[in-house]
Image (cartoon, rainbow, N blue to C red; front, side, top):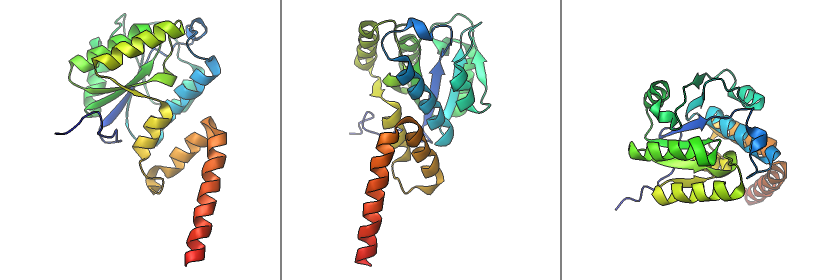
Length: 212
């Protein structure tokens, strides 16, 4: 029997849905360090753009997006909806998700205990396989974030980080079409990991040369 939770997220089956990254709210959340949260948010956006998933970005009426996110999106459109807590209740957002043509949604945003949880539960009700990117999602406190994540997972959402998602989408570091984008992401967001990867690649190249 096929286990949908074990099936990989791929560029062809995944749309990243980014919800309510409003600059006016970022300093009200205490579940994550702000710098870590911004790093993960930008990395998630660049993952979607660079690894060629579907991508739908939306904000509530009157909100202004994180400037760093706007830069990472590189001109990708942002949908401004009304007061819906479940972003998929907005016809424009739902239409964009449907037009992306993927059966898996990866959702992240603020706040965990507000629009994110309602959007995740709404997507599950619509029959999507749903992942939630925890490090690119933030709540008022660690407790409110944690309880909301637990409820989403209990309902069937798959917990992710931006790096676990990016690695699953890449799947093979030799896949040349997206390798530059993938390793560029890691270099920006996790330079220490990049140093380790480079050392491993150098060792592998030396071994291959020695065997030839």
